[in-house]
Image (cartoon, rainbow, N blue to C red; front, side, top):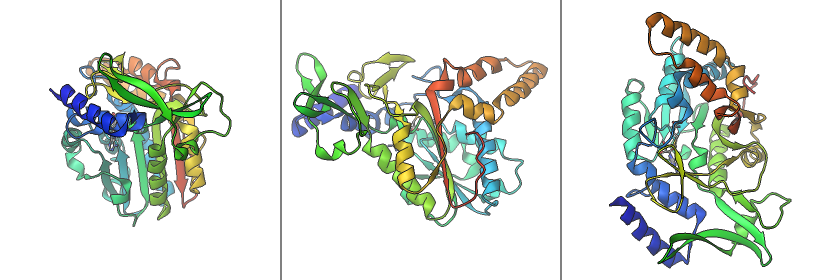
Length: 359
Ligand code: SAH
């Protein structure tokens, strides 16, 4: 069974390393080729473990499509540009975007589609849903030739990139790790924090609280910034998390739409952590990108007219007599107590005059 494979592998790693950092543990649990969660599952939808915004309703992708089309026009309608999606899941978001912008003259011909995805099973799904658009796959933004403007997007991608947890106790900064004990299985522990991680901490911290830092997210954003700055372009990332720096343990596992222990059933539940958007904002600003103020998903989608789109979809559904879930879907996407406020949107651009919409 894949679970056993995961446990055997992780126990060996723990022995070899004297404990695994949260980041290494997360990265094996999600991306190990033999048992990683995304490698062996299709996690989305009612029958899966969780539902993401593009899987809730086509409206989400259509509105993002409108944002991208406007951006492309403001960039001067370049005849060739890279449209890169990071972590496309089933390819639903990109399919909705491309359908929504069909009427924008020249857009489809200009777009060179890249999908950054490391799961072979999900690549296959993306291949099916995007077969009309000739996508190319990559493992890193660095693989995409930076000889044209680029638009990079990602929904619920950053939360899947590993974090590390640090806590200051009496004997100094400690790093949270996972180790194994024969009675209880995988358990959390602490060891002295490596010095290089401390540079990711905010300048003011309090004792006895966990701080989450993510060198992986930072280096991913640096790669995006380097890529865009080589020519010009913009990026848009949507995810759940906080707009300004926080402390607290947000590591979570989800299985069949419910919270689970991140230390059990490894490979069969999704493990994520909230995104610290202030850290992303700072990383991009340091790289010289123009970063827009972080807004809620509700603000972004409503400014771009999702409520009007919902009305049109609703009228169409009434005419055709198809099941009407438009209202509930809209609430799910923008409701204050649903995805509307927990999810944030970060946009940044470089190399052209941009009158930002949605922020
Ligand atoms: N954007 C989609 C899916 C979000 S789930 C949606 O909103 O429905 C996270 C996605 O990121 C999956 O496609 C997963 O396989 C991919 N992913 C996670 N970690 C990755 C990594 N390190 N490199 C490339 N893709 C990754």
